Image (tube, rainbow, N blue to C red; front, top):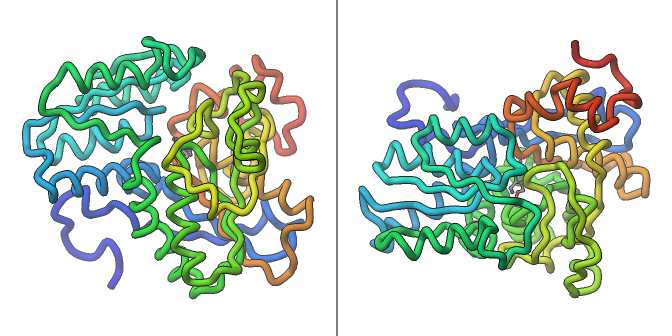
Length: 340
Ligand code: PMP
């Protein structure tokens, strides 16, 4: 049956089952076949709909939350949007602690979705009382009857992708997938997808994407947290300055770091070449795909699935603004003509 035939009971019924679109021009010089798993097709326009719905519905099933209760979370924006959307439909109050690195668009969007938003500094230690982790913990404590989604330290984040994203990729490729390229923030997407796919075929390689300025890749390689790796960067939702327990490092084969500039240029190249308008981490995932290809990870038989986590509309004041791109000094190397 066609996905959108007939009437849908609620917007929440449209979470997941996102399309996979073959890439042509942007990957034309790379060996193998490339598919984009476009998570912007979720009703909240990102992969975070999957985890938000799974975590809340699991809490409902266990009798932990009921209508009128409070949902608290730290979020770079996307999880907040998903939680706000679900809260409206299901009748919860949504309180969000957001990093000041998040775009103003995202913050405005969350507020217009009815969420109460607390903006916190990004460049402070995770245990600083001003950090969004500590603010969320405090809000949770101050509000009895609230639940703290805690996406960086919640096994249900992995489970959501194990139950949905992984099986979808397996089915959509008819079991032919050989590689998955996925951005790692909380690590839920990459871990849940990898766990499922490797159970189907242990030869599938899972290639992670990390940011320059994040500790994730080094931790994967050494098992040690190295604070020297930490430096400010622009990409929202990728990498981390702490080690999330919602990343299962054992199921990821390798990580590749990408720069702010190359990720931004790749996202702009994607819309110009394929017509797919995606977010900053989608550019990061495609840039990493290019870097993995340069390092010889793929051959003509490779079937590579690149997960594109969210929609481009959330970055109009960043990577899709020539002014912002120029301010960062990112535009001079753009391969295709700049967006007017
Ligand atoms: N891209 C964006 C835009 C995100 O918001 C996130 C989540 N922080 C990710 C990628 C990474 O996904 P995950 O948290 O599942 O690792």
